[in-house]
Image 1 (cartoon, helix red, strand yellow):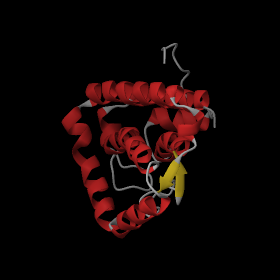
Image 2 (spheres, one colour):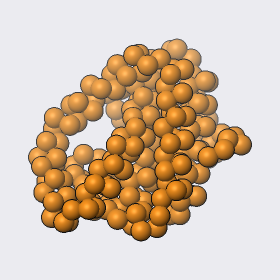
Image 3 (cartoon, helix red, strand yellow):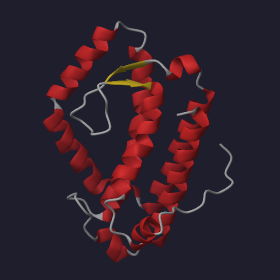
Image 4 (cartoon, helix red, strand yellow):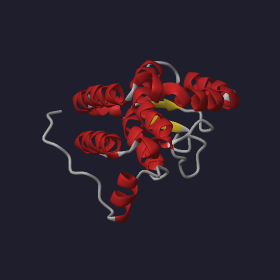
Length: 189
């Protein structure tokens, strides 16, 4: 995937996130999702959290690419050993995230983090995008044993799209049935 493609898919997710929150009723936000224990509101926060995570992961990847490969492999193995506690923290963190932030702050934070990631990916050199590290594959189905920085940037939207299909919001279902998402705005990257 090219840098512009990654930035564009992030923009699509950003616009979609606003569309979903702006069109959801309070009852829909409190409703259950398909395949998770979260409500729609909690899952939306978790989807935002995926982009926040990538912001931190890019720092890790950049640091570990300066070290011998076996160091990141050992680090990933250590994290894999902590998969159960990670999933518990991941679940619990999303329970209150939306309530703490509120919807308007969630939208502003999504705008901020996506803008930052878009600027970062488009400014990255091909060399840095092709460098990578080992990842804890037990933490997420989209984590591969070895991921480049390019993979990490793309991961955020894979994570978003995966969880979007689990939402039970009318706006999400209608867009999915029509196989379309809201059009992107002319926002500069």
